[in-house]
Length: 294
Image 1 (cartoon, helix red, strand yellow):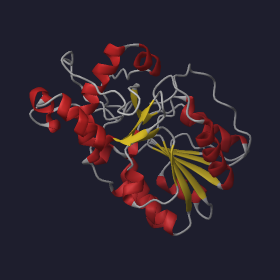
Image 2: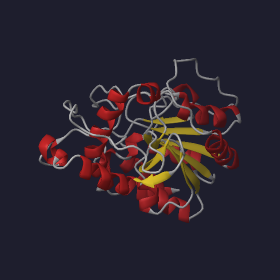
Image 3: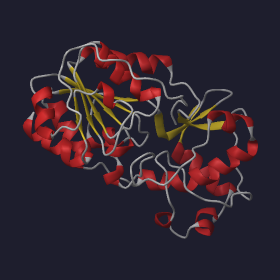
C-alpha cells in the first residue's frame, strides 16, 4: 500500500522549539493552540472503527503483497483478488469513529486546514472532512493497468461473484470471522480455485486503485500534500508509525521549515526525533480532547 523504504536517519530539526520526548495532551494543546494545523493520519485512527493497523503494539505480523509480485505473477494476483473479494466487504461496512469526527469539527472551525491520510478506507470523507488527500488511494475503485479505465469495486464484486459463486460462504460463512488487514486484504490460505476477472474493456490486468508496497505515490498527489503542509502552521500526526518514507517525508518537511510537529501514536514512531511533542496515547480520545480545547 505504501513505498518500501530502507531505514534512514531522520532529518535534524531546523528550529529551536522545545522537544518533549513523552508529552501530554496539555503539551500538545500548548503547541497547537492558535495555529492552523495540517493533519497526517495512519491506520491507528481507524482501529476504533474495526480496521486493524499494520504496526501497532498488538498487531500480528503482516507481509503485504508488493507491487512487483502483483504485476509479475498471475498466481499472486489470483491469491490477492480472492482475499480482497472477502476483505473489502468488511471495510465498506465500517463507520467513522469519534476521532474522525473530532477532525471534522476542527476543520469546520478553521483549525485544521486538511487531512493527508495513509489509509484507503475513506472514513475521513464518510465523517465529513472536506479537504482530504488519499495518499495511498482508495479501496472502492479498481483500475486497469493496460487501458487505465477505472470501475467501482462494487461493480467488480458483481463480476467476481458471477465467476466464483458461493466463494465467500465457502471460505468464511461470515466475513466477521476472518482476520482483515487495513488494505481490505482478508487472511485466507486456500485460493487456488478462485477465478479473477480481467478488464471488461480490454482484457488487461485489474488492480485496486491503491498504492502497493514498492509502488510510487503519484507525484501530483505528493505535491498537493506538500502544499497542504506548507500552507499550515503545524503538523499533527495521528495514528501513524511513520515507518515508510511515504508519510515520514511530511514530518520532515514541517520540521525543516521550523513548524511544530505533534505526534499522537501508541508506541514509538520513526518520526519521534522530529517531534515537538509526542503523545503516547490512544488516537480517538486524544483527538476528542484536542477538538474540545483548540
